[in-house]
Length: 445
Image 1 (cartoon, rainbow, N blue to C red):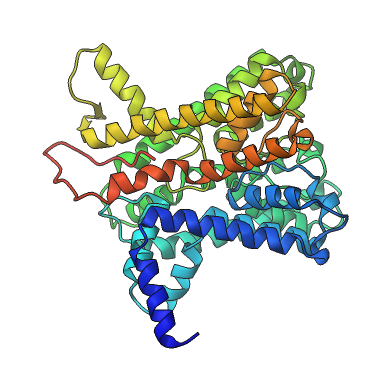
Image 2 (cartoon, helix red, strand yellow):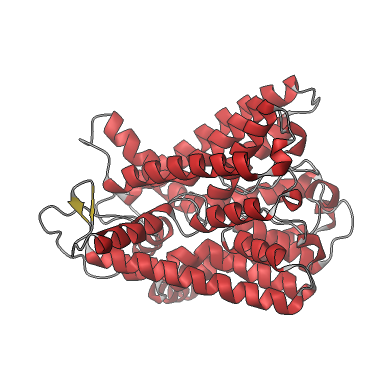
């Protein structure tokens, strides 16, 4: 292709709206992963094209739902392809490319700048270039440390070849992808405290988000006087929702009650964490849990992780903003505040837009699945919530989905990866409004 043709193509790309460019990028990335998985070198046994597509979409969206058993269906090379897919899917498909550009020069193109802010839903006062450097360095540092810890934990548990499982699960946990190279996810390690703690820590760090990590680093290093309102809300919501889910599962689930005390404590805490952070690992078969526990997990999956993180769901800041509006209304107040700071009204509108969009999409996805599946309602609702929340937990029906069912869940996973971002354009493409005295900005999606 001639240089003039490249310039014309680049000009057309620059004219594409950031949201459409983001959607196109993820779609192309899923297609590339799909094609890679069809190579015989990737397959340990024949895998149908629709199952390869499902796996590709699940990996790129960092969901973890699978219609075939990953370590059985795919070779080591296939697992590597899947790892690369959810690594880049977790970081955001333009992040690594932008990082390489920044390593060679000090600025980004206008297109990369616009899409980068949309990917991470960044406030206007964040330096995107510095933020991207922090994201990549933080990600690989945490994943390497996590792999080292899991290698020791797996070796101590008697696993002979522990290096690849340690690396794979470290990246999968931090990217909240939920893919495993063990046929039963992490059920064999239900009573292993080290594996539970390390995977949980990696998942929480990925779920709370790069925004929080960058903000905490700037605050601890003295370059910022205090953490932002967004960071404080994310940390509080994540902590209390995990503790609440932990307590409920510990108290109401009969299957956990039959376990030894330490396993009951670990299993209930791990499943609350894995649902909220949308990491999707399980240490206990989800299909055996009761209706009350299933409902708790569905709620946690819908609430989800945090902005600029690797997880999905509605996002903790959107939920907290909606609750704050409700609380202010019940108290008869016309303004919404968090810890004495007023939240701009356009952020609250965005939070409610995200909430309505999410509920409508979940309802529509569940309805479509009920039309093509014969499984019980609670299993189908759980599957839809898991797909849209990019969680990866299942009550055992994923492998039994019809071809249409697989396509519906594939669509839910894709929308789940992009859904909260669809409001990014409305939030950040508008002309910035000057904050009034006493207001603090809040990232809500």
